[in-house]
Image: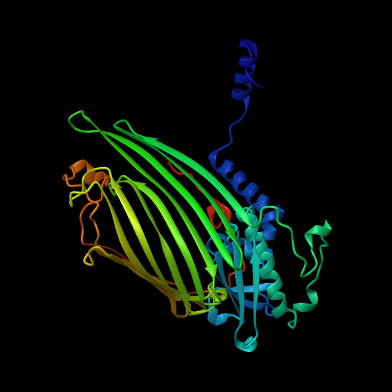
Length: 459
């Protein structure tokens, strides 16, 4: 009874006074007994106790996913319960290696390589899943999972589990959904795709505040013979701090860019192209700059193997123009400079891990001492059962900061990195390992209290 007036409140209080209060021990006993009964009688608890157990008849599968945006192992284990998922490759009958690359239209091409091990050695298969550009992350994940399911059937069919599998077929709803092989599909957009995006953020405290605005737009047309990519990006940010003397320091940074890339296919290993760029950057003292020129690329491996291995050599020659916000250390407000660049990139993804790296050198032809060299490398390797070692690092030799303003930077500009600061080099390095041991099975999914699928909000 809710106390709505004085009379009802009195009755409510009298009932509370007349009700005998059980002792604390009896209350705890009733609570524990009730909790145990609820636990025993709840179907969800019983099913949790009967969670999937490794089957001696099941195929042992190692899930090795490098399609980082869509590697949802919990989802995979729930949707494909007819195999045993193991934690180490050494225990597996099949190693599933998954890699991804973006399509020209903005979708994803996901490659699933099925590598037989042990009794299945020598049996291999590769399936592709290509998503639509408008698919959500969940839709791409489901499509990848369905392709994984299809690929595993090839290995499961000869086992004791095979007879318990059922094959179903979903016919297309509309004839246009399933055009005959070899039929040319009419595309009213002529393979062009477009994307627009914008976002903003703001934050603040009593003595500081700031906001930023970002936007981007792109247009792409990709076919086997020709690729055209157009992109624009803009960022504006403003921050204010109240200093100890009561004055206000204001930091405004702007960066805008636009680029056009055209690439012609010249076979399985060669490509030719042309690039054009325009940009503005507060940090680089650049009020407006442009660059344009031809490019030539050679890939040691065929381009259709690029998700697993690629070693490329890219050479470009450009003419660059610079218009500066402030007079530079060389006494210039604008200049036109020729330059060339050689870039080498490598990426190898194999069952034992992956190795990646790049090296690029840019040299200005008006003065060969003005140059820049950028290097980056990393690898992730399984050294032995359960042990994985990873490292990455980058190093840049910087001898092309002719754009620096002649005036010295203030302490505030240095701390907020509003302007680039003179330096001869820049580096970064990281290293780590992971070691996993214990049960070799990974079938059970338990997301309770945030494990695997939930989340916590903490203040």
